[in-house]
Length: 236
Image 1 (cartoon, one colour):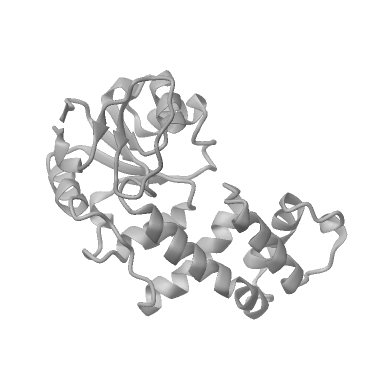
Image 2 (image 1 turned 180 degrees about the vertical axis):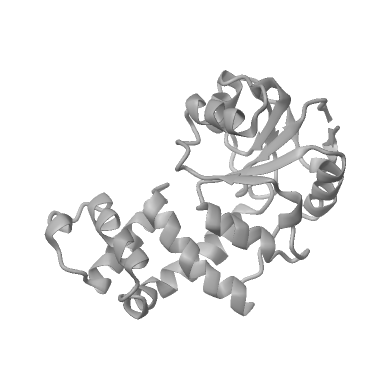
């Protein structure tokens, strides 16, 4: 059990609020199966077209900068980055756009652990500032928590951060989040299933908790982070 007397809770998604299996087996599969059609159908959308050159370059396309818009080629590059599980902003943006259609049509319903809705209600109701920090784009995060099996959880959330603010394994990212939230880092509890992320948050001065959820991989870390198997073990 963790007794937290701070002012804000910052949460990872995959392996923390939601199962790794849902993210990899459902969300990533949905995006992989539809990326080619999505890029072809939206070839006239300037925002989507703008994602293609950096995705091509990141995947190692030798002439990405000079290539004409080529949806099949961009789709192949995106699939390669997905295979690598790349935490790359333009790829995450593209995935979020693909997931939007799935969430809004009802084909996708986000999984969250059963203890999450009650914890969100308790924390936000008691005045805690509750926010998300994930490698998934901010847009994808909002879609995810708006369309869960427990309903719309976004009213509990005051903010979202993705890797645009910085990599999740660098302490500077957490310092910037604390500054944006307007709190001393010591007043923020960061919960994640990844030890290196928790180490970075601890170096920035945040309090930390390791999420031990079903299906999570063993965590490796420099610091000793107290473990929780349910958000109900965090007492505020």
